[in-house]
Each structure stands twice: as structure tokens, then as C-alpha cells.
Image (tube, rainbow, N blue to C red; front, side, top):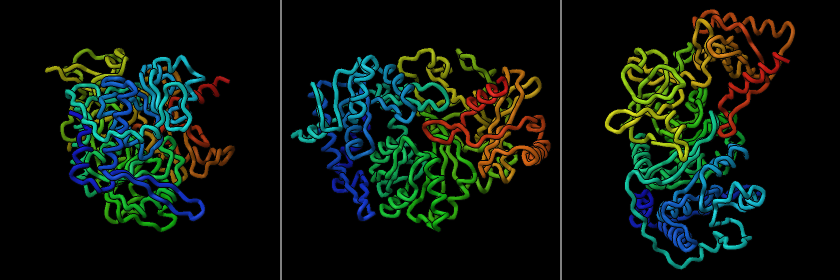
Length: 548
């Protein structure tokens, strides 16, 4: 078993079809030039890379950091590592330097394949990179035994058979973004990659005739393995919230992708630009948004932009993806009005091969699954999942693995998502927020998403955030408001605004006891997706301000 064999198969069956396309913007002409590799060319280039890496001394099982920008070479190098059986380690550079260095040290890689800037980083942090013995650079300057990708392209051998592995053998390590906690290396097996590829293909009815534009570079691994053409958009994937929507729309109009995916931070900017310029995107059948919460408003925006498609929001995490799936069309017809009334966000039915249960909320490790853990029907609890795409462990973190996994019978296990929600009478999963953002008073337990939906009803509220001030169990609930106009009100205007919010809150049992309101000009958000509200940081800021 090896996902790289899929590339070789398509190189034989559709050798001249474009596998990957890369844009280069010409500032003089204000037009894009598109370079590309066919499936045959991509297969050959990955073979050359695999041969060169083998000559360098890398072998099956060696962990190797892959830090290349989105490019034709990125796709070829990824498949080369799989062919050789080297375990690629993917760490999101958008997580910040402190977390980045911590992840590198935890991974203990043997090899480093990276941009020249990363190799320079080694000079300043030698202890962090001390495990690395073999180096490949995408730059032109090399030293010692380092080899350049440019030289690797000159390798004459064009064949390299993919190594075969058992289904449970380690295939890659993907680090979580750290947006909701400390980053952890998630161990992916060859079987999980195969299952994910098959499941995604079936979920979205994808064929080799579809064209992909991934806002998250690694996603192209799956689509190329399906025989699709993957078109790299002109953006920095580490900063989705700062992408230029005009450039992405130009890429879409010229390359005509049918399937686009990535953070909602990307596609909300694209949607706003399209609405401002009265642009429709007829080629797109699927806008798939993941990695952060997706508001109903984004689904509404795309309704007029996609004459031949709709939005989708698969739910999951690096440790288990996809867990459930729902379309924007279904949301707008069936669940949006309930979300507005504080019932949470509907995230759909479980995907094939996945089982979802809701257990009582606890921060304790659970040594064995049993029916006594389960909550009553429709009661909010902690979401756990079991199935074909759930990963078994974190890299070199046995304690974190024990905290996140619940052993079950027949050598199976449940993964704890760290999220809160419930399952309704139709079997639909509803999301109510992160477990770490739970607010517990002396008389009530409050969940972020249901509470915030009520305050978001006010026309001047851009978004809100529930926080609990004080120690768990006796917290004072507070709501922090970010206004659409960005104003930080004071005096009479503030009093009027607060009274309007409290009047709405009094109408609902889960918000009537929230009396404290704070304003924020802009919310702190996660580094990775630039959209997840950092409620814990807001809590710290408020408590620090109150004390001082």
C-alpha cells in the first residue's frame, strides 16, 4: 500500500494530462503565465527526486521535514518521499516561530528539504536542528553535503518503483496548527491516506475530469491521487486571511476549477470581492471550507456567485478528517434559522465509515469506553468519533495520546475532538464550541456558539465572543462585542448599545443571565486561519484590565 502508486497509474493511463499548474504574475502585462507538469512529467520528476534522496542516504522510515513553498516541485517532492518510504513531516510555518521550533525539536527529523531561509534558520538555532543529517535546498547556494533541487532535476534515472507498506505503517506526520492548543504531531498511516482519498472522492462525486484549486497545499496530494488537475492559486497559504481575492478570482476565471478548498478566511474574501464586482464563478461546483467555523453569512454570499455549485463544510481535525459533511444549500433551507436562535451550528451527518457519539464533559483521561459515558439524547456533551480516518497516536507524546483516545473493544478506539455538541433526532451533528471555551457559573453551563448567536442578531455586531471571568465552576459570564464599524463606544452611546444587546439576551434562557458586556475593536484570532476567535486570550486581557 502506497498512495504514490496512484500517480504512476495515472502517468500511464493519462500521461499527457496536466497534473499540476503553477501561476506566475507578470507585473508589466498584468497577466498570468502558467507553468505545468503532466502526469507523466510529474511522475518522472518525483522519480528523479526519489533517486537523488536515496543517493543522499535517506531511507524508508526516516522522518524528513518538508518546507517548500507551493510549486511544481512541492508536488513532485511530496510524491518522491512517499515512493521512497521516507516519512514527510509537515509543519505549518504560519504557527509562529516559537511553536515551529518546538515542533521541529519534537519530530527529531533526519532530513530537511526546505527553502534557503529555513537552512539559514539552522545557523541561529543549531540545537533545534541537531538531528538533521541530510539537507536539500530550493536555493542556489549550498554548503557541505547539501544538495540543491536544481541539481536533483538533472538526475538521469527516470524510474523508481514505489515501496509497498503495510496499512498501519507510518506514512507521514502532520502537525496540528496550534490554533486551539499546543501543536502536536499526528501520525498518519498509509491506510488513512488511502481511506481519506477514497472518502473525499465519494463525498463530492469527484472524477478525473474535475479541476482542483487548493487553498491548502497538501490537499492537492489527494486530488492528484484522484487523477485531477491541481491548480495552485496565487496566495501565501500561511496567511489565508491576507490573500488577494482579485488574484484568486483571476486564477479561477482563467483555469476554470470545479473544486476549490481551504480556510473560510480565503473564501469569504473571495465572496466579498465577487459581490462588489458583480462576478459569478460558473465553473465551480464545490467550495469546500474547513479548518475554522463557517458562518451562515458565507453560505448566503456564495448563493448568487455559484450558479452551478454550492458551498460545503466538512467537519474534522488533523486527527480525524472528514468526520461529517454538510452543504450550504442544506444549511440555508433547513438549519440556518435554528442557528440564529441559539441551537448551535449544524455540521451534518457522519461520513461513511465514521461513528459519532456524545459523552459527558470531562477533562480527565478515560481508560475504557462504556455506555455510562454517554449523555441523554440531544444533550450537549463532548464529541468523540471512531472510524477509518481517525488517527491512532501523536508522535512521541504518549500522555497526549492517552488524553485524546478512549480504548474500546476489539482493539478499536474513540478520538476526542475537544469540541462540544449534540446529535438531533435526524442524526445531524450540531457544534456548540470548543471544550476549552466552556463557561461554568454556579447555576449554569454556557456554550459559546449558542450564546454568541443571540448577540450576533444585533445589526451593528460583526461578531461576539463568550468568556467566563474567574475560576471554573463560579465564573461570571461576559460577552465581548466586535462592532461592524470598529467603533469603541463610550458614554451615552455605549449605554444605549449595551441596553439593546441585553434586551435581546433576556428573551433566551441561555443568555438571560449574561449582564457583562465588553467592546473590542478587533478580536485576537488564530495564527493559522486568521478567523478562529481566541476566547482564552480575550478572557486574559479582560481579567488583566479588571485587576489593574
